[in-house]
Image (cartoon, rainbow, N blue to C red; front, top):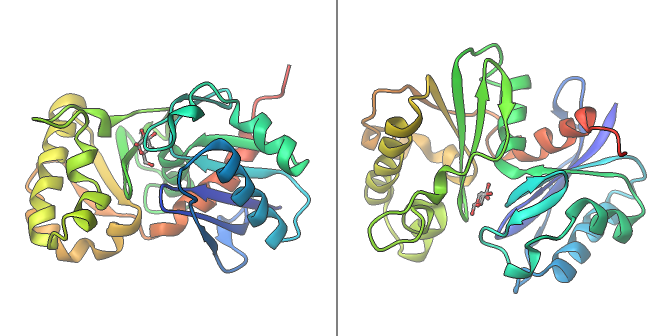
Length: 249
Ligand code: BGC
């Protein structure tokens, strides 16, 4: 079955058609920049443009960079505060006339990795960390998603949340080398290890493709590997999430 998967990020919104049986991407990724400010009106227009680009009519799966419960944004993360309380599924359904399943973006990326990628069959507590505008986390226990883990929200020194200091966007903003930023990321992983004792950490998002450049800075006990689906995991997992949408009541 072919499903349109959309991965909404703080800097780009990306889509592709996905074969949800195999987890393969069937088209090239189409990306548009995330508008600023990142408001519901402006962002939903861009999401609708992505749907139009594919001239697509079926169900759509969407990974969204905030806490999402039953389609509703429960904390706006790095987006405009006006997202708080918005029913994202309903908004996108109104905009496009299509049936949307919306889940947290890191949960979506983890979902792809655990079902079609390097995490397949991995038992225990596996955490997917996505490195981008924020630090996303998708947690799986014996392969089952525990939704909306928000490990990037741990307060750190003067920062309200550690992602402001250790995400990919901090590396870009402060023009840090991988060696410098890698140390920060290791500090973040040390907290993750201390708080939840995972069995495996899988890295995704933009910086994961450069894992070789900061691998030597990662000094925690938990094994850390990079997802081979890399930046595509968010799109693939979002598409796959449509298979598990609870019926509307
Ligand atoms: C949000 C998370 C999201 C992550 C990655 C954070 O700011 O709180 O929900 O998964 O960014 O986009």
